[in-house]
Image (cartoon, rainbow, N blue to C red; front, side, top):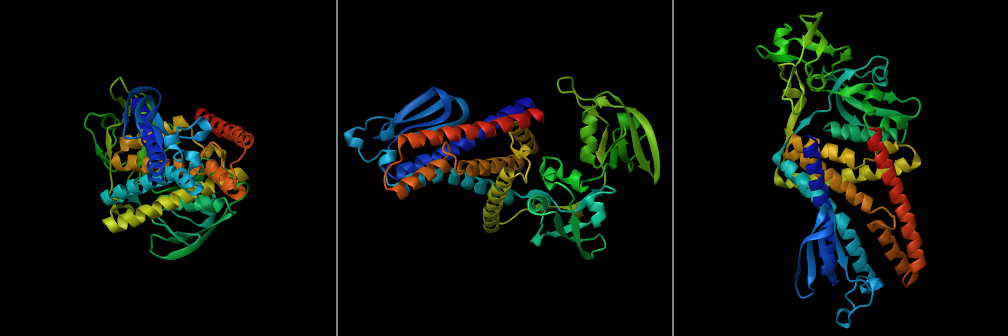
Length: 444
C-alpha cells in the first residue's frame, strides 16, 4: 500500500505539473516567445536534446515531481540581437498574461477530460439516502430518519452525496441553519430545517461533518450474505442473515466499517455482538489473518442484501458527458475558491489544507480503487493546482498576472525593488501554507 501511494503520488504530481507547464510552453510559443528549456522533472538532467531552429532544450530530469519551462527573458541577461523582441518581457502584456493564464487553464482542461472519461465509462453513484441517525443530534432534532432521501438542500437539486456534502459545507460557512427537502420511505415529501448551535466551523474539520450533524450517508449494513466454511465466522457460529452490531463495543454502522475493523485486528480474539431473528447475541471469535507481509484480519463472510435502489450507474452519452464534465469542473473550482476564502475569515477550518503525505495516501487509495477513482483524484488535484496558481501571490501565476496588470496601468515596468519585496512576501505566504499543510499531515 505504501509503495502504491508513493508511485501514484509521483505519477500524479509529475503528470499534472507537466500539463501545467506545457500550457505555459505551447501558448508562449504561439505568442512568439523563445523557449530555452522545457523540463519534465527537476534537478540533474537524465536525458536532454536540443530541437528546432531555436535549439530548445527538452529535458528529462532526476526528480519526477513536476517540471518547468524557461523562456528567454531580458531580466536574466543580455539578449542576442537576432532574438530581439522574442523575450518574455519584450512581448505585449496581453501575450504575457495569456502565457501565465495558460498553465491553470490547462489544468482545468485536463480535469474536464478526466471527468469526460469517467462519465463516459460510467461510475457507480450512491443516491443521497440517509443512513444511521444518532440520538440527541441536530439531525434527530430536525426530524431526519433512516432511509430519507435528500432531494434539495437550500433549493439546490441534490443528485448524489458529493452534491450533498458540498452544499452542506457551503451552507454552514454562511449561516447556522440548513434547509433540506427530503423524500421519506413512504414517498412523501417534507421540508426540514436543521438548526446549528455554536461554532459551525468545527463541522468543516475533515471527518467531522456527519459526526457533528449526527447522521451518516447510507451504506450497505453489516449483514452477512455468505459464511466461508471453516473460517473464523463459521467456527464462531455466525450464519447467513446475521447482522453485526458491534465489535469490542465499537459500533458497526456498515459492512465497509465491519471490514475496516476486522482488517485492523489480525488473529485477535474479539467480542462480537450480532442480531439474529430480532434477538441480540454476543460471541467471542478468533479472527484469521492474511499473509505475513501485509497481515490483515479475516472474518470469512460476504455482504448480504439487495440494495439496487440505493445506487445507480451514472453513464452518459458523449455530448452529455462533455457538458457534465464542464459543469463538474466549474463546481469543483468554485467550491475550492469558496472554501479557501472562508479559511481566511475563519469560517472554515485550516485543517482542510492537505500536505504531500495526505495527498499520497489518497493517491494510493484511489489507484487501488480503479481507473475511474484515480481519474477523479487526478481531476480534483488538477483543479486545486489550477486554483492555487491563480491566487494573487507573487511567486504564483496569479501574482505575476497582478504584476503585468500593474505594469499596464503604470505604463512602464515595475521597479526591481518592488518585485523583490513582492517575491519575499510571496515566499513567506507559501512557507506559511506549507507549514500548515505539513502540520496537518503530522497531526493526522
